[in-house]
Image (cartoon, rainbow, N blue to C red; front, side, top):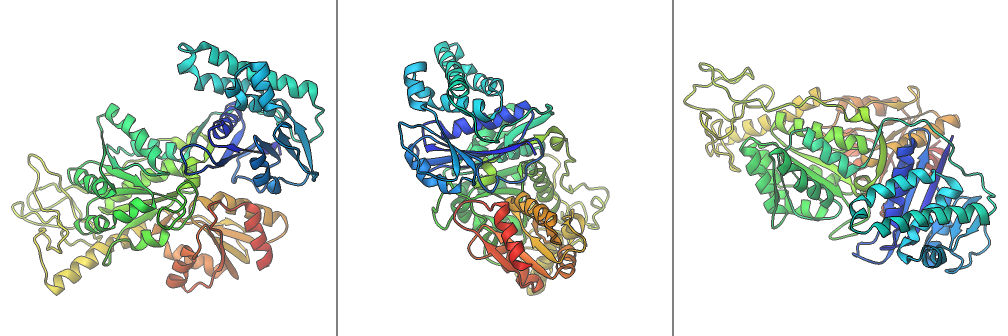
Length: 582
């Protein structure tokens, strides 16, 4: 396989992350598949950061077990990352910063600082020097890198043409240095590939594109890492298509505003992370009781409390399942990759609108920032499903089994599906009161025990209806597997790569990855559990939240594999769990 994994370590503010982005974009535009992972500090400036990009000529499912190439922009980056470099890998470093200890790696000394200061005569081009060195040693071609740099600096070309010249010069000088001054002794080199029609974007960008395609026309939110990119993008895009954006004073106001817009008939969403999601819990109950559609994005980060704002974790599942007091029906969707962020946010809007329910979209920090090259076909138009509207025709509503005189609108009419026809305010509409109080079919407050019982059953029937109607997860791997893996969220690709590697070693393994976590596909999960001898549940949280859910619901005694340091699983870590079970 024509593949390489490159990690860049440095200080926040010296171009580590932007340099990694340029490599990924350049490689993808040249025709390679890419998959990235980054870590950076919570401080605005300063602190260690890292960017890792895996580049290959076939689809890539994970960030890679180890970097083949480690580029260190300072001594601290070397100290923090050298232990991760694969045996026989390559270290690229500036000899003015440090001298590496002897190890099982090939070392190339490249004077990043000196080339930037003396040859380019602009120290700020240090990261361009680094990129030129990487291109000269390993690929992708310098033309691909230069094209991305030109695109990024196009706005400043007119105001500062010298800056563009200096950056291009830095790329060429570094490439010339490594090709003339260094003797290449490693096997890592990207070959040529055919160009393909792919889109290069991260999870948040795909989510925004999906929300707009889903006809979201109202967004309210409050800035919070790692969801702020969603808010910033929609602040720019929504007004251009007749939509509305509002930055509210806090997350409580954000969801309240979204529910108001949805009550008015507009497809609406908010986006936050764990601390902000905590503030929304009362309104989740209100949305569920009043049966108001809403999409709530929770971009999970390491908690609890403020936690680690720039690190990933899958630790909000239990909270998402139970947030708000009382028995509160809600639906939960968890994407696994960048393409899912597009397609499943459309599904989330369709679910919210059809079932008149709050839908929580559980992504995480690693997926929000992960850059992937995705086939353009993954972004094809999808069906947009609207609400079951209240349209009077004589004494009948529109075929959902509820009949009522036109003068007495039963907004919460009892139906077999649990879904009642809904109206929006405006001329000719049938008015009703959306209330958090228990109510009768017309929406009037009602505290009778038998009526509360009937309404609770009606609201939960929507989950039963959805469980029958929504798509089911597909088994991945061997039909006669003895070892099963059940995962959720951003771990899917990593799990699949581990399954592929295990099967190549002779193990019988299969995986199931439900992306709708409420309601769960009961029959599919039960059949999968019965079909194997052991089930591994890998999760990026401390308590094993999916394993707890599967144990409570299906009696599963799962083999728990938990990682909660703020970094995603590697395929090798899951493969080791498979080997231990077997």
